[in-house]
Amino acid sequence: MQLSRRQLLAALTAASAVPRVARAASVSERRFIFVYTMGGWDSTRVFADLLGEPLIATESDAFTAFAGGISFVDHASRPFVRAFFEAWHDRCLVVNGVYCPSISHSGALRVTWTNDSGGGLPDWPTRIAAAQADRFVVPYLVVGGPYFAGANGVYVCRAGNANQLSDLVKGDALSGADLPATPPTAGALAAIDEWLLAEGGRMSADPDAARARAVTRWTTAQSRALDLKLLGDDLDLSSGEEFSEQIDLGVRALATGLSRVVSLTHPRQDSLTAWDSHALNDLTQSELFESLFLSLGDLLEKLSATPAPGGGMLSDITTVVVMSEMGRTPYMNASGGKDHWPYTTALYIGPAVTGDRVVGGFDEGQYGRTVDLQTGEMSEQGSLLRIDTIGATLLRMADIDPAEEGVVADPIEGVLA
Image (cartoon, rainbow, N blue to C red; front, side, top):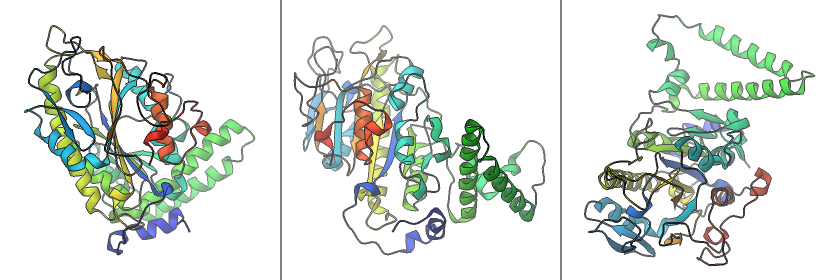
């Protein structure tokens, strides 16, 4: 029997003390961590083996390496990348040749996350979280990175890069205000909250349907805010800008049952274009890939060592999705950098996918190759891997029918576990 949100609140603080028994997780129990590498990573420096292709600017001293069923581009400057695949290849799925029909930062960002250039639709993490919203106080916790909540904003909460959420929950938000302020007493705050909920309930019955829907969403958000406030000091919601701090908060949110989905951004919370290597591409990309894969290894170690709310470990139920909104051109520019390119790679790590394999690929011009969606194997009669294909696959991982979300593309059935 599923816990109500109120029952969940009572269980959160005791979660870490409950003995855990390893078991196979059902699809409905799956959790997700989205990691965004903002600015556009260069697939040819790790994921896409295009060494020796005359039209592709590759590193002269790079070489092809294998870890289990994963092939990758190895280089002396990226030992942590090699170490990561050697340790975790059996849980990794690399999907190459993903096409996004935009190469502007804002356009590619919106399309990659939502498959909607207009920005009205919620992003993939929000849709996954909303499907089980009643089971979580904060269905989707945005620790880092962009988000597009659409009409599902009541299910999304941003942590803030300076402990804003933690300060609000603990009542410390006014302590850092520019002007001194004395907060209302606890009794007054409780009375205000009670009145707001009652008034919201009354206004939800407004004959104006649009107004009633807006008030209902507001009341839902207010109710969730009160649930979160009840946690008080019992849940550590502190965050920071660095990726390691984001990881810590994200794992805590999943371990306590607070959230189903969290998102992080590498290397820092405010990094909107860190991977945008228009100059010094090889130096920039190597340093960032090294940092990313070192931290991903730390993340997977934490998931493997952290009990899940219903038994077993978080690694049994959590899939990590690593994405960039675009790729980089096959050739170098005059500054030794690479510009924007619409074909990229996605990396999945965890139980929702069949690991130890590379799906898709790039041709000699670094355009995406077509894939048989039923098997995941490349095929001339297959389909180009577009963002809607990726979105449909993500939704299926979370046991959501893509058609019910308005996504008409078919998922890559051959990669689903």
